[in-house]
Image (spheres, rainbow, N blue to C red):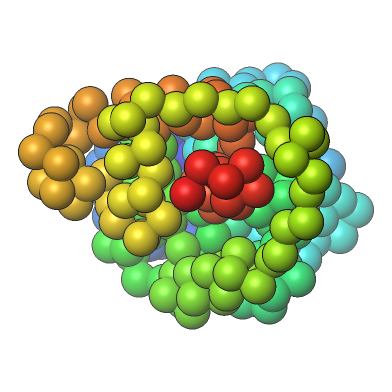
Length: 215
């Protein structure tokens, strides 16, 4: 059973998301909050949650600030930003805050369900328009870092191969097929890369990899 929390101040959007998730028997909505502050209070009482759907624009405490707080306190909980915004600034701030995935509210039920599964398996899902903007943000970022200031991060040959596959936007399943290894092995290597790069999500991992000239 996947235990879900939702932070959404718009009652119509909240009910629409609940309705989309209701068709899946393995999903249980544990918390539904109107803002970030309310969600944090609910988590204080019960943090046995796998994943949170987080709106960005909310009163009292917005989704970006709430994501930062949750990632600091509950490191195992995955966060999917679900919003009407595909603005560059929102995407960048969500990534910096530690959001694992970023999709639009118009996303269909089956894609939302796939997002839950992929995100919990270590993936980073983005709606197509958001993915394009995120990649442009990464490509447009230039780094001028003195060699002595670059962190000493060493990846194995296999980890480097997987990192390069990730930079091309391939899913875990596709990477497994390309490298003739199991999806489980891919997942374990990605977890090791996350740990070595001290990254919270796939976009952040790729950004840090480029910063440290690993790809």
